[in-house]
Length: 391
Image (tube, rainbow, N blue to C red; front, side, top):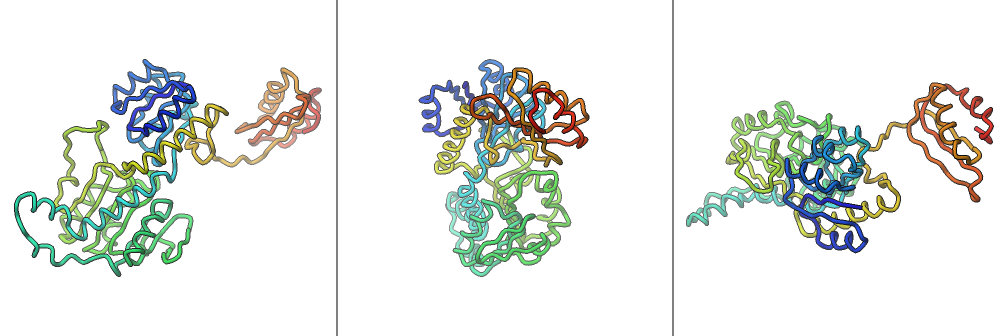
């Protein structure tokens, strides 16, 4: 396969792919128009990205593109809908950056609590101001609230418990962990927590989750942490809340409208606010995380090269609509049997979803499993077909 890697990637991973005779084109600085041009010029089978945005124009630039791998967990930087419309697989590496993001989350919490940024700045200005930081609260005994309780949040919880914090968590599908109070609503988290940390994906349900109403339910001297996605926050509401509550703080690794370039001049109203600690979307940017993600990305490529498919745990844009019915058709294996069976099923008013063909030993018969919905009497039509053994 020909593989284009458009972001910083594990050297060991590149070596493995090349040793397996894949052609690798590596340019960590590709983004925007340069990525579109590279896709058109190199025509790769597989595109690997980390934070680089993949647009509809990028996907259309190469009709032969078959797989886009997000070397990380979140995939809102990829136009998944357009990829699906072009029959392009989209895959990710869930859980492989969880430790790195959890560490950054705790780093932001500690930095805000002890005002590490201000300490650093004053020392570089040649000033000594020990008295300014005498009233930092500390973390022991305070309550950390987690919105979302997946891989990353669970690692945050373990670290917070080691700091002797109380941890309360909400997840849409309840999960448990020793030492963590799992509650049934977000409001219960907001009522208890001194610090609230967001760990939810970017979906239509989580977009603008943090709004005026949400913030109004937090403690006025609370801390909000977002290492998930910028779209979770209504930034105008958060700015207004910061102005109205002088003891409220925000720590973030993600902001809306982040540049696609790796380095450039960029100002953001939240990033410029004195009670906002911001990092440069570096949650997964550790060597440890890079190696883990690299290994998983290589494994996805290996599976795809061998089978032409993607494991279910990695396949982002698989249609997960549960079929109402499954037809099991046993038939003689002839050159025309597949087209005849599927044509008959479709002609009888069936909407066909996924299907699979299982070959019997000797290659004389095949078992077709067809998932979909339609009239039940299709089995009678199938049974009457000369190549069908049973249906």
